[in-house]
Every structure is written in C-alpha cells, then in structure tokens.
Length: 319
Ligand code: F6P
Ligand code: MN
Image 1 (cartoon, rainbow, N blue to C red):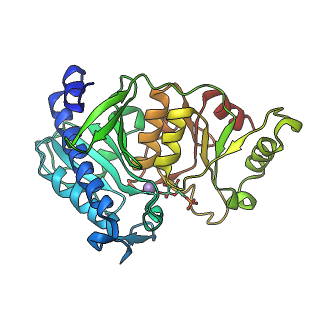
Image 2 (cartoon, rainbow, N blue to C red):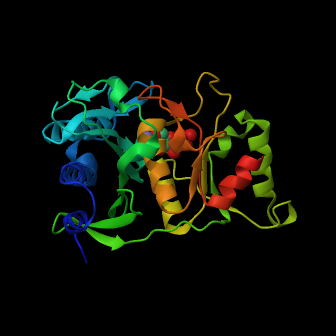
C-alpha cells in the first residue's frame, strides 16, 4: 500500500502543489486528533462569534480554521487562503503559486452529537507576483488544480483529485500518515438513493417538489422503482456516500430566504465536490448550469447544488 507522499510523488502534480497538499493534509491529521479528544479537550460548544454567513461558530470551527490558516501561511507555495470562517481572503506569500479556499469544518452542527464532519479544500494555480486579492480567487471551478476533503468519521479518510481521477486514503493513526486504500472511484450512472433535507419541501420550486414527489412515489409512481433516502447533514458525509455507493445529493434553491440562491458555498463546498464527482464520472449542476462553469462573483457566494449519478442528475434537471 502506498502512502500519500508516494502517490503524490508518482503523480503529475508539481512539487509546489504537493507541498500545499502535504501541509493541508498534515493539518487535517492534527484537526482529527483535536476532534478525537472531544469534550476532554474542553473544546465542544459555541465560541460566541458568528461567521460571515451569520451561523453560530463552534469552538472547533475556530480552532480548525486557525490551524489551517497558520500552517498554510507558513507554506511558501501558498499565495493566499480563503476560508468559510474569514470575511476576507488572507494573503500569505507573494512568491507562492497556489491559492487555497477551504471549509475548515463542514457540517459543524454534527460536532455536538459526535457525528461526521470534515474539511473541504479547493486549490488554484495563480502565478501573479502582486499581493493576492479576492479577484484572484474568482476563477471557475474547472480551473481547480486539486480538490478534496478529509472526512472525520469512524476512520479518518482523505479523498483527493489532482485532475487524474479520484483516490481515497485512510489515516493510519499509528504512523500518522494517509495510506491509499481505493483508486479509480466511479459513481454509477443510475441510482435508487437520494439525499435532500425534506423539511424544506414546501419552500422548493414546484418543479423540484414534483421531482422528489416522483422519487417518493417509488414503484407505483412514474419512476417505477423504489428510492431510499439518506441525510448526514454534513455535505462531506453525503458526498462521501455518493462516491462510495452512488446516489444523488441536492441542496436546491428554496424560498425561505429568497435573497439566497442556495445554502452551499461555491468556492469551498460546491466547486471542490463538483470536481471530485465529475472526476468519478458523475455530474454536478445548479438548476441551470454545470457548477464547474460558474464564473464566481465573491468568495462566499452560495449556489444550489444537484450532484451525483449522471443519469439521475439529468432526470432531476429535466423537471
Ligand atoms: O455547510 C453547510 C452544511 O452544513 C452542509 O455541510 C450540509 O449539507 C448542510 O449545510 C446541512 O443543511 P441542513 O442544516 O439544512 O440539514
Ligand atoms: Mn460547510
């Protein structure tokens, strides 16, 4: 079995990108340790601040953000970072060639119930020699040099793409390193499993309501097959299930807050997950376009997300 370092060395990823990935994933190993200590470390609960989206920050969100920010700023290959927990981008090294956007702890409402959470990251190459600005980050997801997540579940897993398919790694806690455990991840084109927060049903568009109504109607309905439903309430957990056993995941537009085009964030949730899903043969769309084609307008922009099994995403969009 190959370690992450060996896999990266054998890949076409430039050395500077390998450094960014090694730094990021090493910090995630530290975050994993902090999570495992749980309340023993006195770090569960609310830190008292709100993040830029007005959600309550948990202490571990703040801690994970600070760990990633400080380690990445010290990595010479990093030009700037953008984080869910930072209002503005944080410039690092003017000579650095890579920009990294991350969600330090996705699904953080799961922390207090000891359920799955994760770190999601998206990396862009950017060779400008000027100090980094937010505008440098606003590249479509199709230009990502690498994307991935670390899932803090029963085992700690890294799922990574540098544009040559998707590889899964499992943390060997004794050695403190990620070891490759699955390669050539492929999402089946058809599925009988969907993921959506059903409590929002009455706020969806009528087309989305009809689509889900037809899924739920099962064998007796127009789809003529039964569907199962799962919802981890952490995108990282739901997307991981889709990469492992297929399915469709949706966080569509809803009318609860008409000013928001969706709940999930383009730069550090939708784009990296879209790259992983497409690299596995799946599809990732908003209601109207391929996620990786979106020209971002801001680092905290939100988008509707429909991703997973290619034929099922097409079916959903046909409504
Ligand atoms: O980061 C936002 C997020 O926590 C995602 O990880 C997850 O998919 C979603 O929100 C959960 O939303 P809800 O609270 O509606 O279940
Ligand atoms: Mn998140």
